[in-house]
Image (cartoon, rainbow, N blue to C red; front, side, top):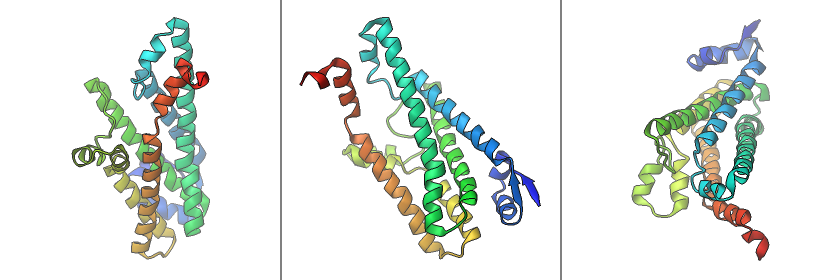
Length: 230
């Protein structure tokens, strides 16, 4: 049998999708992958053009005149496009490949799972971006995460950024991954939950490490010539 993959249809009916994947041939999946990827790219570009996460270096852009500002903005836009590609590829291909090695489930099935994971991550970013645009301000932590709570109890940026990666959407993703994997492999639920949670914790730790690196300071030194004057 053949069934047509519909992203939003099966987003709300995962069990039907799982049943179809187990007994039928899927059609139209690649088209939806490109659709989600294109939406993700547009979202990252929209955030960049709006100035999200670039407020610390905007003043540096503006001090060099119109030409320097235009070039700097184009370079920044190219950088965010590359980052969007890496981000989407990692969560789609990278995690699917990792889960394939851990569970032995076919990569094609796990790719379907991770497409929905990417969709949930983009949904979180889109909602946060929408709120920021409405309010006209941004925050260094996600309103949907434990980041705001961490700010109340911790002073160290590493801990704040770590908890900022754990959100209500993370819990939704974990539940989705566990349910999907258990539908194709008989794995102890407790063991599977530990594996999936461990993966998310490791990713949160890595993100927190990168977040505390003085990337902006290094960039300012590079732009101002400090990196070449030493």
